[in-house]
Image: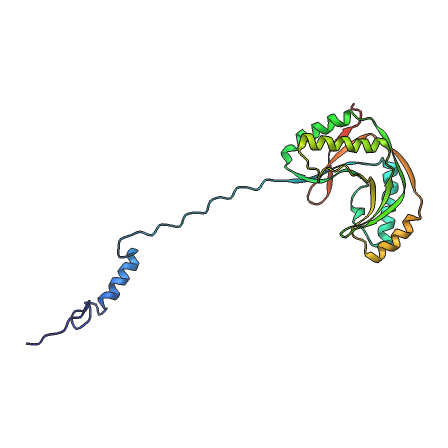
Length: 238
């Protein structure tokens, strides 16, 4: 009598009924069914939705010259840009910064506009005096500017505004600073070092005087491409 050896998982001379080793057939079945223990693979969990980022805008508070003085300053900006190829300051209207640019949630606009309106209503219109030019070169900034005389009126306006922003809107001491050097820029950080030294010598010898009355305080907002007047506050109220 002939006996045929039957190894593990092999029959009929080591072949399954369809000519495929049984262990291979079982492995194929496992792949089709998930696994040999009957466990189901959990579907991948969908990612949690990300919280939307809060929208923020950039603002600053300034004084603007009247039309006649503003037109003369724009002419000087154009002259400077043509000669020294420094055009950054030419892209914005002449202004005197009272509070440097700050970032905030637009939801505060209503409260800030109302507070600035009340603040301006308690201040009296005053004259701004321009007298000559100045220049400053720091590690990251080179400026050529028109000097604004530090009269008691403009210095008090700045001081009282800083108090308001710190007390009512939580501005830090680093953001709302008491140090104040009012000016109107002719060149903003885009003038080369060599050209700056030449322009500094030229403009520090030039004379320029002008006076204009300040009737409004302005809150400006950046659109992403340019500054726009968000709110105009009348000094002394209506």
